[in-house]
Length: 302
Image (cartoon, rainbow, N blue to C red; front, side, top):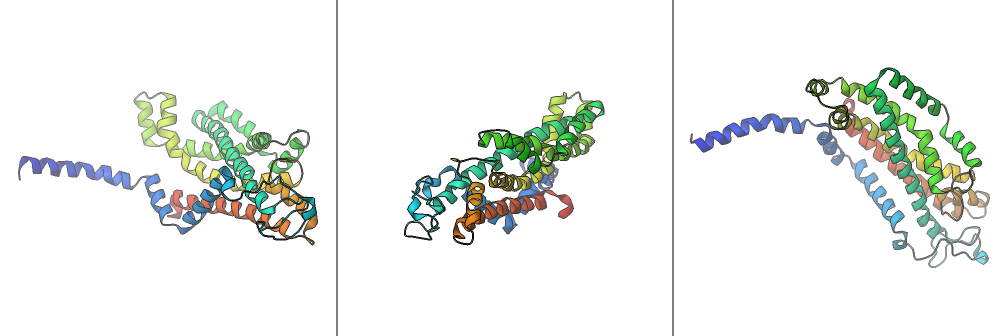
């Protein structure tokens, strides 16, 4: 065997543990499982479609959701208006398309904000422990004891405006304790691992241990909960808007359209079915994605 061949053999042997470790990584296995799951592709395509429609609704319709003709109130489908008209004479198809923007925006922004708050509060509580854990846990218990729907009705009833920012902020403030509990438990489990203890023994700083060693290994359960919660936040926004305390006109929202169409369900059921169907399909897509991500990231389900 030549020297070059020997060097290649040694390099190949040394690369075996690295390749095995890479193959055993949680994220690598999760991505492999996701690619084999048809539910992931179905939900991902639906969500991608919803995001594109939310950003560029004009590619789906050239009709303005604010262009209303009272003379066409509650009429059925017509040329250029496949979903008919609502009580105000507005095009139901245009309002259904434009309604995706508010719902998807509220769901994504609320999930991101709640995840950031929950990860920070729960991560710090789990890492430092002691009185810090007790303080942050009690703060979380206070917010956790307030039902999001009831709290939203109470607080939004006294807040005027009904903007997207107000709804997102309220739902995130009331929704972060659930993610905080998950993050706290994941951090407590991660900080007891040997690699964290080794980093501590080598003098690694607290920020380095949190960001480099603990956070990447504690994110999996948080991602699962946040993905499933996203669909919940979308339905919650629609519920608050339906009750008249969430988003307010002129914002186009499925919840607002469902509320206005509720009294016309017998005479003009199309005004209710289309926005309600779009809402159900959106929530279902995010829940399906959350289930697929959970199956991929949960080692117990392998």
